[in-house]
Length: 232
Image (cartoon, rainbow, N blue to C red; front, top):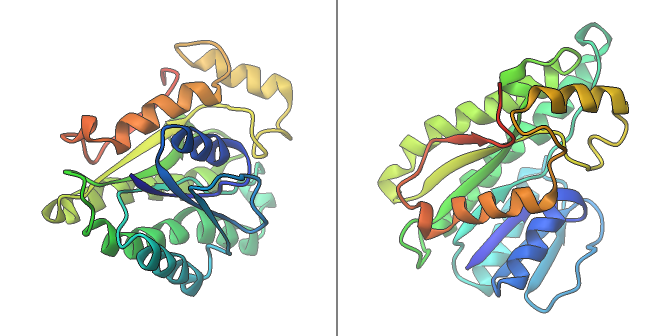
């Protein structure tokens, strides 16, 4: 498969890219900084995903090299753990720019290439968070931006069904990434206690569900956001 994954320099994006490369797929990744992956079947683009023209340029490069796309994983995102009264409007808008509007633009441009896929049911997968169903205090703007992505997933799945393109989401619990490294350990432990499976989510826990949701094995699943760890 030809897979586009956003935010591949570190964390979940890098783990996913490495996994799919090990499986023999071609991966196109992007981040604002240089690549940390060295593989002959990996192509990296240094882009600001809030720039719609940059997203078009990435998809144009994919079209020129591969002629198609089989899956898109919208992984790139940012967060701000703060009371909404202490969150400046610019910070809130910046969070929505990367967490929602860049996802919308990536989907718009990638859809043109997904229609050329040789897979029976090419897929879009959007990364969400348990902060949405849990309505965590101190994460209003972040969870609102991801809630918008969850709604995007539901509506877009219907709008793209006629093109045989599936759209799903995966909601992540606490996992060791740059987004959580500044969160106090006590806060992380409290969140883990809310899960049905009471341990920290690992990269290994994520790659399996992601691989399933972008593969033909999940060809009859669309419009769903699956939350890991057991949301209760």
